[in-house]
Structures are given as C-alpha cells and as structure tokens.
Amino acid sequence: MADSKLVTFDAIMRELKEGKFRPVYYLMGDEPYYIDKIADFIAEHALQPEERDFNQTILFGSDVTAAQIADAARRYPMMAERQVVIVKEAQNIKQTEALEKYVKQPLTSTVLVLCHKNGTIDGRKREFVKALQQNGLIFESKKLRDRDLPPFIEGYMKRKQVSIDPKSIQLIADSIGADLSRLTGELDKLMLALPEQDRRVTPQVVEDQIGVSKDFNGFELRDAIVNRNVFKANQIINYFDKNPKAGSIYSFLPMLFNYFQNLMIAYYAPNRQSQEAVAEWLEFRSSWQAKDYMTGMRNYSGMKVMQIIGKIREIDAKSKGLDNPNTPPGELMKELIFYILH
Image 1 (cartoon, rainbow, N blue to C red):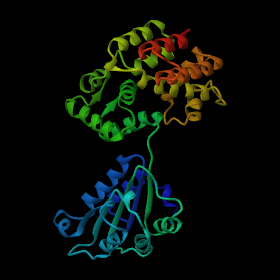
Image 2 (image 1 turned 180 degrees about the horizontal axis):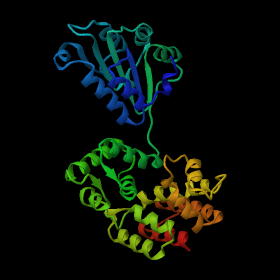
Image 3 (image 1 turned 180 degrees about the vertical axis):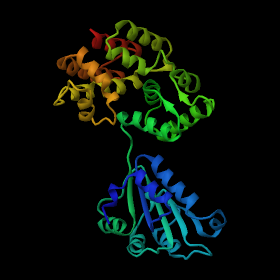
Image 4 (image 1 turned 90 degrees about the horizontal axis):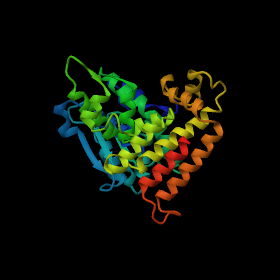
C-alpha cells in the first residue's frame, strides 16, 4: 500500500462515495473541518439507517480505554455487512497498546474511525503508525494558509453550482478567515439567499448577507495599498478608526504582513514579468491571484517592501504594548499606512 499519509481529503471522499471502507481510519490534525466531514460521511453512509441501532457505536477518548475500544471493534455486526465504531477525542486515549494490537489484525467487518483533533499522533509510536499505514489509513487535516482560502471558496461554490467573482471571494476570505466550519456555514447562508434564477454571489450579496461592507473592508484597504491610492486608503482607515467594531489593527496587520511577505518572495521569481510565472512561484492555484503582486512590484521597490515588513513588525509589537505606553490602535494603524504609502 502507498504511504497513506499522502492520501488527500478528496481522494478519501471519492473512495467512500464508491462504497469502499477501510478497517481503520486515523484522522488527525489542527483543522477539525475535514476530520468531521470524513467521520460524518462514514457515520451516515457505511450503514443503512435500520442497521445503526445495533451496529454503530460512538465513543469518546476521555471516557474509554484503548482495551475497551479494541473490544468494541472486535464485535461482529448484527444482521449487517459491517459495524462502525467512531472514537471522538482520540487524542485523550492514555495508553494505546491494546489498540495497537487490534490495528495489527483488524476485523474486515469493522470500520474503526479514530478522530484526533488539535494535534497529530505521537511520532514515537512507530509500531502503531506502521500498523495504521499497513491496515488502514492515516490522514492529517492541516489548517489552510491564507493564500489557500480563495481557491477553497471558489471550489466549494463551484461544487454547489454557484458562481462567485474574485472580489467577493477575497471579501469573504478576509472577513471570515481560515475557520473552515464558520466559513462554509457563511457560504451556505449566502447560497440560501440567492434566487433560483440568478445563482451568482456578488460583493453586494456579501455585504447584504455577511455584513461586510464592499467599500470599507480589509479587501478594499489592501487594494488601495496595492494600487498606492492614498486618498482611498486614508478614507478607509478613518472609517475604521470611527467604527472599531467594523475592523481593527489586529485583523489588518496579518493581512498586510501576508501580502508584503509574498510580494518580497515575488521579487525573487525567475520570471517576474509573467503573471503566470509569478503565480507558480508563489504556489497559487490560479494566475489571477498573482495580479495584485504584479501591481505591487510596479508600485513598491524591493527595498521599500523590506522596510515595510520591518515597520509592520514594529507596529505589531506596539499594538501588543511593547515600547508603547499609550498610543491607541487607530493611531498606530494610521502611522503604518502613512509609512507604507509615502
């Protein structure tokens, strides 16, 4: 069997939808969304509804021992092809020896799903890992990086047969961030609000349904900075200074740091005159994501970008109270924007 650590979420879901269930799944990582999706699909589709009462068991790692999990997995199904045992909070299982022994010789009539959130399996448990790889599947669910959010949003909407423009995608990514459970919930809410005859998400729809202003938000601030639009950038900053609940330095700093950090990397692209080449260099999934970096390289020199990154770090420290006795966040943000644009 190939190294199961390399199996992707999409590959697992394709296999499950084909009705192929492995004896053991070890689902781990810092992103609970994918872990829940896989476990929920198995819970809903591995058994017929009438088979679940006697053949589906839900356990919690803090409430059971490894021996009890192994005993549950060794039971034979009752009037069904298989039984399902799902262990939530598997990271709380104290001793795993009995479970390791089971995984070395699992029953083919049992689907055992171990959900280990907010971490990964102890690398020192080599025999356990080896047994999981040989007889089951290990999947690591990683947090998406900021740059991965636009492709995720676009793909999610495409699968639902809903179109969405790049500006709307960035508005949603900037305002909601990488909490995929919350993000998909907001996307589902957007889709419910769309009329049947017009399945398009626009910035106006985002503003109406999520409450993100299409004129005063992080995306528009970044756009103003990318294009070195001094008037608009100051207009947005002044708006947020008067309406701190709408946005703050604590959400804008990571966004700006991420942009200028990538812009610095873009300067080292072998062919930075080509938008496609820059997108590939930055490991973007589509070339349109590199558009702002092409503009940024025209408006900011490499030396200026280095200085801006240093200034962002300085303002970030001050926003946390380091070497800053009393300057309010709004003034710190104005200081940073002035420095970037002049």
